[in-house]
Image 1: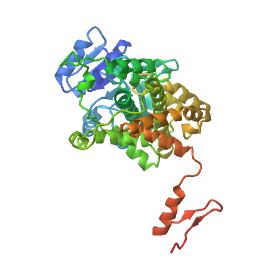
Image 2: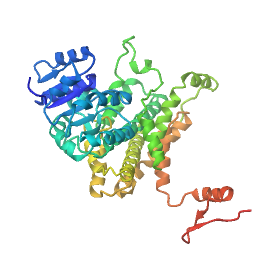
Image 3: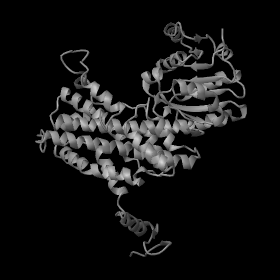
Image 4: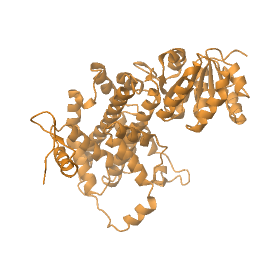
Amino acid sequence: MQKAQFGMIGLGTMGRNLVLNMADHGFVVCGYDRNIDQQKRLLEEGKDKPVQATATMQQFVNSLETPRRIMMLVPAGKIVDAVIDEIKPFLQAGDILIDGGNSHYTDTDKRIARLESTGIHFTGMGVSGGEDGARFGPSMMPGGNADGYIELKPILEKIAAQTDEGACVAFIGNGSAGHYTKMVHNGIEYAIMQLISEVYALLKNAAGCNNDELHKIFTEWNNGALQSFLVEITAKIFLQPDNVDASKRLIDAILDRAAQKGTGLWTSVSALELHVPSAAIDEAVAARDLSSYKKEREIIDSYTSETTAINTTDKKQLILNLHDALYFGMAVSYIQGLHLLQTASDAYKYEINIAEVVRIWKGGCIIRSLMLNDIRKAYVSNSSLKNLLLDKDFYNLLEQKRNALVNSLKTGMDNKIAMPVLSSSLNYFDMFSTGRLGSNLIQAQRDFFGAHTYERIDKEGNFHTDWN
């Protein structure tokens, strides 16, 4: 057989779709999976394409041209290490081994260090876009070292999503930069999904919109400034009939208990460790946790009197307000995520180009949106931008939408509709745009009970007062 140009370990939906994507672009690809049925499925779906499959790991490695380019798409954790242990004896210096799953960035750092003496290039690569993205063009975030990426670039650029600014893939940075960036991507994703659910709750329960109206509203929004993958699929969800009772819509039959796999939590933990405020992401994680207490929520709900919708007589105005409120919240989600990414890049010496990250998020990935064009312009014009709110034009854009968010929040509070991410977005914006906060009182308290000292506004140094 002709030597394959790329190898894939793990032939589940994502792995198999990436193999077929590569084959569509003319690359010879070999797949390996311990599950023989997965091997057969790949060969069946890839018939008439340059696709191969092997029965053993050694045969798999021998089927690849050198330097070998191999991606693992297996569950994060111990399985990744087990695969590395199995394949390592068959590899040589210069080969590239990619972890394409959602591994924690600290695990990626350990694996890079472990393989460093072998000369094998270990690449932690975030992949976003879901099943369709893998098949027809994902956004990919590879990190590790630049030498390893040189061998991968011709293939990855061909299979990536394409936008007006090129392929949605780039070398992200050193070490675990790729997996860290994907983690932040997922944190932003958590926040935006929660924002959309809060807006949905207001439209449904305060404005009284039915599913057809909701479909129309989100479709119109997706044709304007809110154009994004998540708004697009939200519009489609409202039309999906129930597969049990076709006279109803599926959305009304789905239990209101949101699950999670942990990447949002990882983002919040890292942000806390680096002292970067990421309240939108934190609140989104907490909201999923709170939603899981379904039985308790129903018991407490029975204690309260039924709420009557108020302050929604101007339905059209509420919809306009919610449009701008959602834009505001989405922007804050990006702002917080990118601030964290820049801070982590400095702390961990990733050397991430934020403008490039925004560019490759413009297509293929779950958080792609029209808004990213303006965000990218801000970072291109000022590569040292630490926080997007420091860009005066972007700040002014959000300032113009602030009242719409405030009015939306008032409606939500009047109708007892929880809006954790919308409200935290306003607090974040207001605190960041306030030159003098009430935090001086906290420092006085700390010095009072613990002699932690404080700084003064009129002279340099640290001071302590005998408050008693």
